[in-house]
Length: 178
Image (cartoon, rainbow, N blue to C red):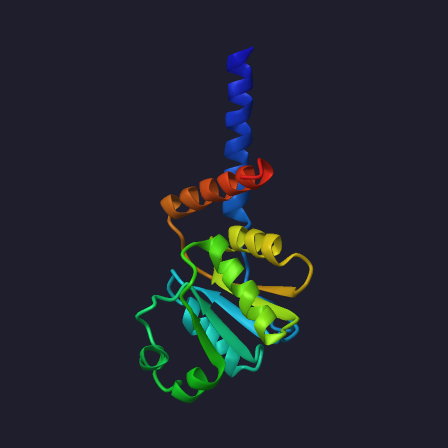
């Protein structure tokens, strides 16, 4: 009986991983409504560049780079992006208070409230979007309209497996109120 229960749990876990891997986050549709704000979570290639493109295209009016290294300045960011100094200086805020996805959401919530925004475009890698969205919805509730905008990647098995486990553990921790 115990072996059957363990096999069933292993099967559910495996099927969950397959579903997770096949349903990664997607970029926002081209016709998605513009938002007042965009939040990009640091930690993956192409995220910040995509977020700046969102600003350039008028899909958001202001950007928070959540989880930025405290040593990074706007000038550093503008140099990295090449030719975006004016846009970075006027419309980008660097948030360095957060260290993980949950604190990214908390930092973004404070920033959104301080600027009186009512909508936000959430930008992160496709493999990270499910957990990021969960954390943002948990922290922000229904106070803000959230548009999901995932950056396409080619994640390795190890990346997907690790993120799947983080997502499951976070959901279990929230369920247990930890």
